[in-house]
Length: 217
Image (cartoon, rainbow, N blue to C red; front, top):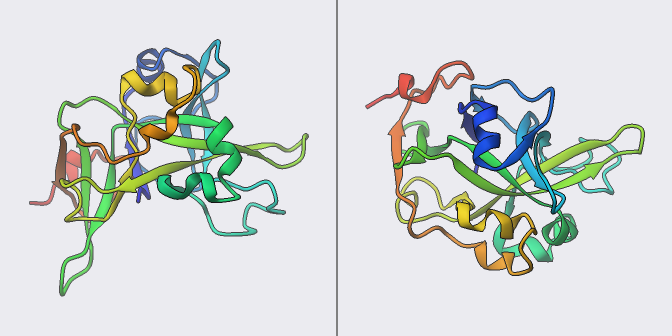
C-alpha cells in the first residue's frame, strides 16, 4: 500500500519533467510526510496539454453524500480496478500521474512496534505513481479527488510489505494518461527493472524534516 509519501522536488521542475503546465495555488513543497485527505500534486491531460494541479488524496465515489460517507479510498488495487463500481469509470476515462520523491512503508518486527522505512529510487529520479481521479459534489461545490494504485510488492519490498505503489516510467506516461491510444491495462503490474533504496528512519516522521535526516540504522 502507500499511506505516506514525500515530495521535495520543486513543482516547477516537476512540471517541466512531466511536460505539464503548472497551475496556481499549489501545495507546499517540500513536504516530507504527505498523508491521506491532504492535497497532492496531480498531472492530468486533455490530450492537448498536461496540467500539474492539485487534488484531495482520497477518492470519493459520486454516490457519497458527504466526504465521510464511506472509507477513505487512498489506495486502489490495480488487479481489481476495472471490477469495482467506485473505480470502473475512472479507470477507463480519468487516469492521472502523481509525482513523489519516495514513500514510507512500515515493517512489522516481531516483539516490537512497526518500523518505518523510506523507499526511493536508486537512480534518484522522481517516482511517478499511477492514479485515477474523480470530481465529487455539486456544480457549485466541486472537489477533485484521487487515489494511488497499488500492485503486489517487488522482491526488494516484499520483506517489508506485500503491496507497493504502481510506478509508471517516462516512456509510458502518455499511454497511462490516455494520450496514446488504448492498452494502459498492460502497465498495471509489479515493476521488475526499477532499483530501489530502502532507508530505516525514525518513528518521528515530520512534514518538515527530510527522511535522510531521520535515518535510523
